[in-house]
Length: 313
Image 1: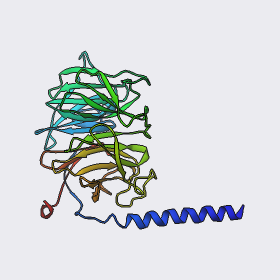
Image 2: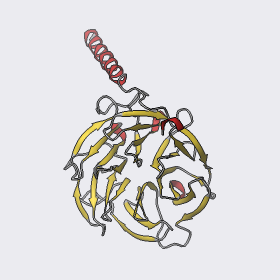
Image 3: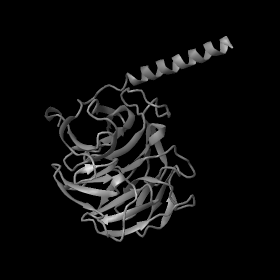
Image 4: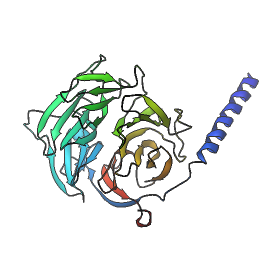
C-alpha cells in the first residue's frame, strides 16, 4: 500500500512539474489590457442585473443577457442605459438568456431554460425561435451559446446535451458538428475570420478550433489541451464560459473561476491575460468594432470595458 501511495505521489508531482514546465512557455507576448470603464449593480431596475451572463456588441450598442430578470438590456458603448426587452405583455418572453451573438442586425439568444434559440431585431422585435427540449437531433438541452452565420443559420452549443448542432435560416436542423462526439458541458462558440470557429468546452477547461465543415482541428488551454482544471498559469482555464473574436482575429475567452480574461492569437498562441483581481466571475465576453473587450462580471453584476495599452495598439 505504501508503495502504491509513493507511486501515485510521484506521478502527481511529475504531472504538476511537467505542467509548470509547459506553462513557462506561455509568456506574456503582449501587455495586459487596461480597464477603461464599468457600469452596473445588482438589482431589478434599469441598468441593474441579476445573474448577468452573455453580451454582444453592435456598431453602437451593447446587449447584455440579464438572466434571472429574463431580459436583454441595451446600453450605449459608453454604458448609458437605453432600453430593455421583452416587456410585460409581449407575446414572446425569455426564460434564462445566456450567451448572445449578432448577425445582420439580428440578435441570437441561447435560452437555457426554454431549450431554444430566439431571434430578435436589435430594437427588440421578436422574429422567430427554433429548438425544442430533448435528446434527438435538432433538440436542445439547456443551450448556452450560439454563433450566428452569414447565411442566416446558426451553430448552437448544447450545454447538457454535450454537442454542437447546426441549423439553417428557417431553424431546421442540418447537421451535428464533430460527429457523435460528446463534449463536457460546452459553453460558447465564436466565428473566426477564416470561416472556422472557436468552441469553448466549459468544464473541460479548453478551447477547440473547429473547421467550417465541423471537424475538430486542434485543442488548446491547460496542459496541451488536455482537460485538466486550470491553476492560474498563463494559457490555462478553470471553466471557460464564453469566447469572442476581435476585429484583428485575437481570441478572447473568460476564465471564470480564475477571475480573468485570456487572449490568444489566431493560431491559439497565448498573448496575455488581464482582469484579476478586478473581475470576480467573468462570464460573457464580446469584442467591439474598435477592438475593445466587453466583459460581463457575473459575480459583481457589472459590465467592464478593456482596451490594449496605447503603446501596444
